[in-house]
Image (tube, rainbow, N blue to C red; front, side, top):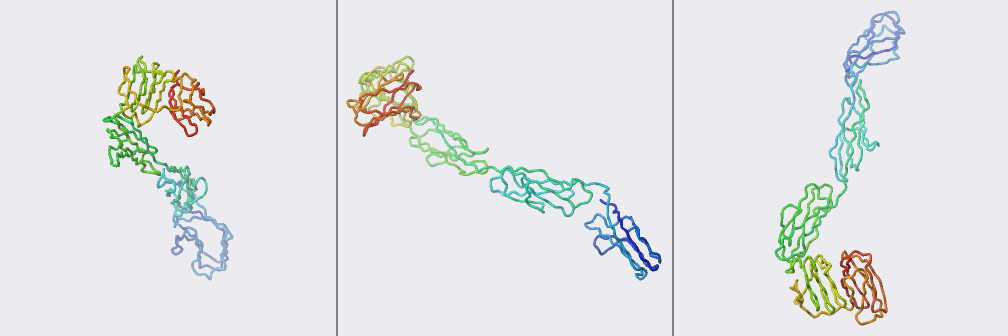
Length: 448
């Protein structure tokens, strides 16, 4: 964009005679030269010393502009020409702002992924210089591109130094690109059934819960090794006993490990045991077993259920046993409640089909070597060993329905030992007794 250069120099000509000319010339290649405005024809009179201010108007705006001081004509007509204090200046008619913008080949990448950054200069000149920086520290140099393996939150910039004349903002700093490097995510999936065990012919819904499934997870349900269902986190069908149900998750996220992932396997228990059983107005005087694949309810709706002295009642449910205030175990009566998902349930012929009235089906059953009373209890109860005083330590552990030990103690040389569930929430508890080679367990119910 330059229109002229200002040339200043000091010179002295030791002349001899006329016949030669002093000139200023310019060139872009050192071969082809152009006469500029200033020249002087030598005479027999010395010239100078004097300071000359002139202009150079040709061969501008190229990679190189060369300026030469030349003598033409009869070179015998002067003795010496001295030139020094040479300076070249210029005035910019227009100022050109320097800038640089950078882009990248990728972002939101996985660890150990190379990324290439590219600089786009404005008014960088013919030989622009680039200095790349990562987190403010010098990195690659000399090129419009720079590649490396970034870390999360790395900040990448580039500094451009232009070799053009008449520039502003030189050197220029680019925009900052902050890298996002995603962590490696483990993929997993777990499934749950709406019911298990279930009665024959009852549909079951299975739900898959993904971990790091991404925005577009793909589900493949599998029953007994065969693909079933649609691409959904929910699958429903009517199972058969022993069916094996699982799910395969293929994640749509990036930066994964363990993809695709296979869920836990659910083994279906399909029985003829009723799903729920309500026991009302029953008095157990011998041995009797009641079962349900999910819930047993005792003495609901103002009815009663009791275990008389000498009676032995067993309740086996897959999920819940619910006691209402009409349920009672009298002194010397025994009640065993068991939560056994999937069974085993009451074996025939011990199974009771009487859920109302006063009928019972006695069967022979070996009694445990201890008993608990009163059962249910409001807090304090007694552990009584049946007919012997142990010489070995007796260990007692009481578990809640979550399987947590809520009480533990030892005793020796006692036929009876007082225990307590005071301060514990109402509900069903398992009491486990171990003494030498003898062990057993029984349930006790705490009521408010």
